Image 1 (tube, rainbow, N blue to C red):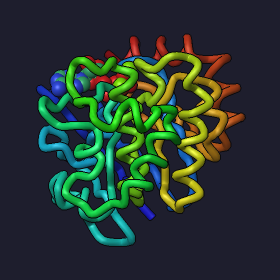
Image 2: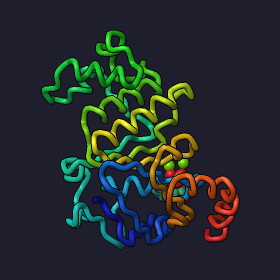
Image 3: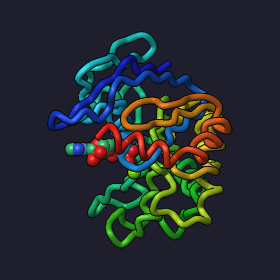
Image 4: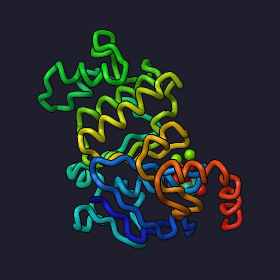
Length: 237
Ligand code: ADP
Ligand code: MG
Ligand code: MG
């Protein structure tokens, strides 16, 4: 169980996260939804422990252990992982070596992960993870890499962004695969189809959890009120 307790985070004396409480259990899919700029990515970075995202107040607990002061590498070792909205590029590394990352992973597993994200292994294994791959292709490679990593907690920041709409079913299939593997998936998303595949969602508004509950309830509410949410944002700024 991963728990955020009263997390606050400010940047340049601007309070971006204003005391949030969240709970994530392994084997479940969680949605984080809300308008642009409300703090969704920031929450993801705080959970991952990126160096610029240490909370000013509150605690992060992993199975009861306080991990608030742990850095990103220490958290990664504990099984927390982040799929960036913008996938990285690595000059000079092939897809195959990128997916292996010094680990002894059987070739069949690598091929299976690529097939899972709709990349034909024969076509992609020897390609380089550089700018010659499209953003969508790199994102698929990152998804395959997450599948091989088998994180306990995976934060996905807008997994559909930069990927063609035809890949939406694949992304939902990947999210469900993580659930089957026993991972907790925390999906930041604007897309209804993805939000509805989560079992529980948090609606974020102006750096706070505005509402939480079953995803159908949250999506229905958000669709009706996202303009109001924007208004609250505006009022608080
Ligand atoms: P979302 O992911 O919901 O679109 P973000 O978490 O990216 O929102 O951003 C939340 C707010 O924090 C925004 O108002 C954004 O401008 C601000 N913000 C994010 N990162 C920084 C930063 N490094 N420096 C200053 N402001 C930031
Ligand atoms: Mg955004
Ligand atoms: Mg964002």
